[in-house]
Image 1 (cartoon, rainbow, N blue to C red):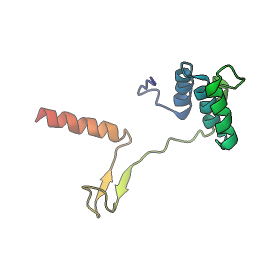
Image 2 (image 1 turned 180 degrees about the vertical axis):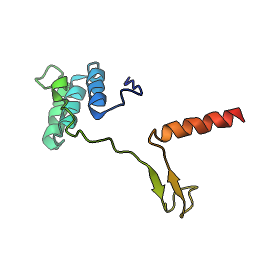
Image 3 (image 1 turned 120 degrees about the vertical axis):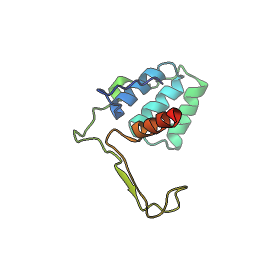
Length: 122
């Protein structure tokens, strides 16, 4: 998939799902139908698996592939959730149990990039 993000346009769930639809255009009929079922929250019960199996064996069968109409608008206008710190971790590799890791709003990736850049400069 090829979701491109910029600082002015962060990746959203809606954008990722729209990119999924574009990617799915090149998939087989059963994959398109399965993706639609997953995106719309339809249960993949025994009947759904049987229908997908039949579609796999005969791609000309009637089915409903995923489309942009299956992508719903985001339902929340609230601020995005951000990880700002990890406090008192237990049994997490090299983190001390009484340690606190704080992150900037710009995110972990930004901090990791700066740390890697600093290492290369040393």
